[in-house]
Image 1 (cartoon, rainbow, N blue to C red):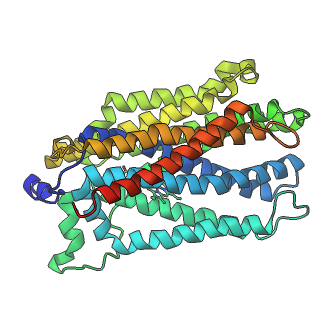
Image 2 (cartoon, rainbow, N blue to C red):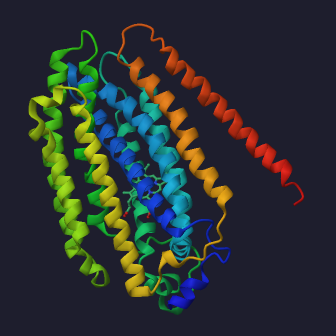
Length: 407
Ligand code: HEM
């Protein structure tokens, strides 16, 4: 594919804001998505592991992790939509071609995702919180994990195939015979996929540490359970981080020739340093983990690490498509639309901050008190403001619709 052919595949309407904004939001939302995926996989893995243990602490953790996994699946899916929107805006010639070449898998991924989602709920239904006795139907949890990993693998293939326009024709018409079925998965890179999946070990380790700190402030919390969480977190965070780094090194060492130079990029070094800093942080903090907000610091640094890993991943794609194929997303034609740009940022920054801020604060505080929780007057006011803003936001769309009717 020549650069001209690739440019001809772009949306001729252009983009409604600077393409750099889409790229940056793509990285940010990818980091959020992958963090939710890793919490989901880690929590589901611990649920399964705990299901086969007799130890009462493991059983309590498995119940807690099942709730976490259920919520994290929804969050991972919702937060998957955002990078999907951004990648298809700036890289549309590549993303859509890759999707069309594996169209059946793209459609199948939705069915597989529904299966994985249902399986986790069925397992929950069979093993409600507080259930005594042996765990029922643990195979449902195994099935769910396998299906969710399959979805991740399909998405990995789509993301990877887009880097190889020089191979698209051989995939579309092998031996000169057109195959429009979209039934193939044409290229994948196992170490890359495994790197993102094994990062769930340190991520869930950091999550457990945060959970431990959160439970610590509850009155009458079981000290033995808190110690258990701390020890388990230690066993997961550092060793898990090192395994992920080894897989990352394997990924970099096996990059295809046109990407190989990236392995020596300072971005790789930055990503390695921040991952190492994250996994060693609990040891550095020591007893401070039990003070103030320090117990949450490892997860917070881990989130920053994922943003930097996401940035490095984006730079790899940017350099590959620019260096080998002459495609620069930053040169996308801009058809500036201030109205939609402002609506987006206000929705994200004001409406999102108010509603999410309210719901998360209520959930956070409610979990730390015994008995019925009553929000403070200030928080209740924030709730009313958030509801009002949502009503205003919905009305604004109707008003806009009427104003522009027939225009
Ligand atoms: C629930 C199971 C899922 C898992 C395990 C998963 C896992 C992953 C992984 C490992 C990657 C990185 C791939 C790579 O760079 O090679 C990724 C990227 C991505 N995921 Fe997911 N994902 C899941 C669900 C979803 C869903 C439901 C969506 C869409 C609604 C989604 C949207 C995306 C997008 C758009 C990217 C790539 C963005 C880009 O290339 O810039 N994911 N996911």
